Length: 338
Image 1 (cartoon, rainbow, N blue to C red):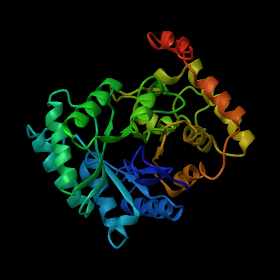
Image 2 (tube, rainbow, N blue to C red; image 1 turned 30 degrees about the vertical axis):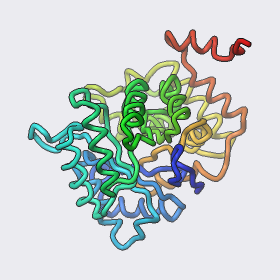
Image 3 (tube, rainbow, N blue to C red; image 1 turned 120 degrees about the vertical axis):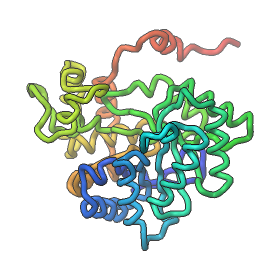
Image 4 (cartoon, rainbow, N blue to C red; image 1 turned 45 degrees about the horizontal axis):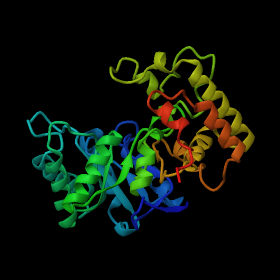
């Protein structure tokens, strides 16, 4: 597996990152450890978790697997924000919660430091200065090596980078956004901003919760039995079958299935390969419930789409740009005066 630099840092990570959200829920500890073994045997070095996954169980399972392994050979990322209880300071990005959360994550992971510590979502209730100053102290204390952000707008990311720069604090060097063939909004601002600022990009849900794996096909009237999508039907705040069952989705799926067949690959492998070719993307975060699913995803490396296949996927997944992006796009290639 190829190793890539994370943004403008000197940190090398594998071109696929293994996400552990399913540890302890969709996959028990035995299956989780088997997947970690398979991932590292394939050359993977980059593993992502979060304190809120399984209310800490994911970190605990990963921590038990880490015992006896060479810690410095791996890049371990976790996230902070999630509410871990009913206490007033059990969530968010306050100094109190961040300090408590990182200590708890280190205990669960059984390690002295986290390679990449990410804020899981923007906290509108805590002063940004408080959050960034606290994260800076964690880096200086050696408990955290690098900082990242997830689920932020471009304006919020830029504000964070500018504030850290002006105060001499450690900046965010990694962004974890939603990005895939069915969700390309990150291209409007987040990806260009990350490229300009030297921020690495590790997209979550690169297969859109299974929609880009080939098990969803035109003509279906409901999500497959046992799929994640089926479980979201009654979960408010998430897209459901009704949201995705449209011509835009099926055009992308049809093209993906055709391109994958031409390439002799599975749809999931083709969707991940499309993303790995996108400028600025460091490592898509793949998740799995079984070794078989993981093995399929690992097949995204070691080959490439043709330029024509990449173009067809780009065109099939393109959406009309809203204002002001449509105007800006039309004028982006104008020659400068003088």
